Length: 297
Image (cartoon, rainbow, N blue to C red):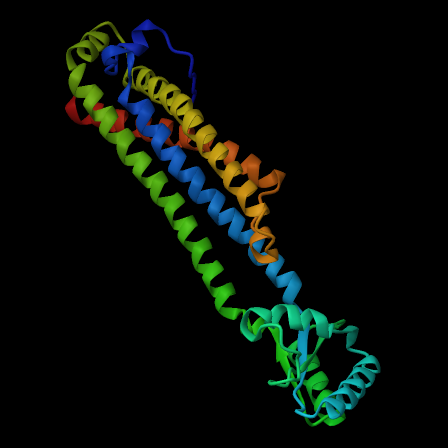
């Protein structure tokens, strides 16, 4: 199938151009705008989910919840020693007490940590061998070292976030597919409308020896050009909006939100969407016109 988006005057008269504004072009601009936004959302969620997986894979948090401060210090030291001797543990870091005070200040105020409410000691653990079995062995070793220690998997607490991200990715993919289907439907309607509007012209072309394929080529060129121009307008506008949103998100200081970035590969995918839509529209127009011409002859 040959696609030539450079059309002549005869091609341009086959579809309606009232006042120099083609409805088809602006419809495609709107569709590409929405499609690029949906695709950018999906790609951003994919990157954020990958960042979350990398950050949480094999990470554990140990809490030492002894009410007595001196007992808590001894249990924390025992847990740290036990963790340092485990081959499955790569890194052990005790969370600074001042940092805990800062995190709890909005709820507890400026009171000292142990003045009213005992604050547990927290230990971040990075495992060299991520997995449920390794985590179970580490948890057993921690409980053996100190009975007041509890082990939590960060991935368990954030599993709802991961599920939400997967739902957003699936929704974005479904929306992109829906927009492609809608584009195909619009092209079919535009092609049929053009055939009905220019029925007499097409009959004359047939009498002059033009084939159905040649007539269909005129329509597909016109629709391809409108799709490329409108798609480029919509895609550029959407990419500018995405860039502005990402700049705002980068200033939030959240690691999770900051993971929803777009890399160079993602921008190339977004830039290729108008071409994909043009190919889909051209193929749909060719099939629709050829089928319609065969039915009426």
